[in-house]
Image (cartoon, rainbow, N blue to C red):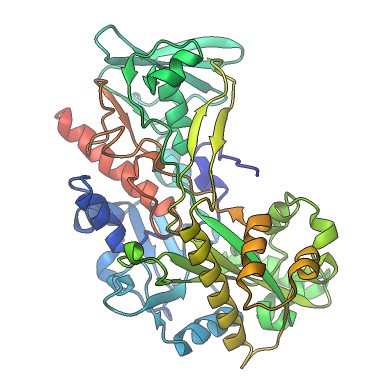
Length: 497
């Protein structure tokens, strides 16, 4: 499985699907109950709002009180909406799910069995608004205390004899360089590389470090452990292209209407180029695991076309994709194909990140251990079956065709979409990562609630790796909140106004 990262200014916010999803409020309350003091929902909400500049679509129901409007990160709905998104929302509502703001209080389980709504996106004037665009671009070259090094690869944190972080070592243009910290060093390298940097710096499980010939300075056995991630299964099915894409269907061919849509986008920031076709999501609880009853462990998303180039890229990473998938139908200009994404967003299975070697350029060893817990398989199968219920409900009012089961699985397990055996095989063969790794330097084990690395002075971590558990939704919004909250902690602890 490919595990790419956003190696650019702004990180993976420069290449993700731009969905702004905070997760269930109870996710954060569970963090707090587990020892992450000051990380409950009411404590993190102000930092979610602080960064946000929310401009909702006038026809979409939102909870304005939980959104910010003065932050640097633009958040909005796609405009115009595709007709098929409305069909997805109506189908979910007819199945007793509430239509609303999934980032609002309505997402709590006490309000309904689940929440469905159009995606909120980090988009500004029809273009991606990445973390770089929101937080860094305006200050590049404008602040004397800001130096940005590109083409640089961090290798380790420099610790003195008192286990204080005093700087960082990195490589650039073939040279080994270092920078000295005046106050603190903050790692924001993500759930794969932040633990890798700690391990290279001598902070980790003693036995593992010494086995590689590294001196263990701080025996911290949980560094790189407890890796969580979200898995999804793309479930494609045939439908009329006009059903899925509506007025944008013409842009699939080289026709005059496509040129008109492009010109409209250039003039207004609206239209087909302003969307990823990742339109809306339903969040709910499967009810298969009592220990997850406090949150949403399932997400089903509507993608209006297989022509999304990112989906095409992911598909071609699948072994024997051309042979076993219905490529002639999935990418047929004459007939539309849409996708429902079944997503397990509260997994119990844990992986780890370890070192493959001691060199700065040695990649980490990443073992996700997906679906190793039987409870995850049971929940995921339930999500897949609910996805078919949604599709069948949509088919009552829209032109929907058959689910495109991979040919090899259909020959081995049949085509009964109520078969647990078929779904488990489909998951184990073709489930993909959503690129949401977390929890490898989690609060309580590796860092304290103020994100200071235990056993090391003047060193913090501020990224998805500090999450005690993965949130129940796309991780971008939670990561931005973590950045805002840790920045405030640093200012408080260093008496910076």
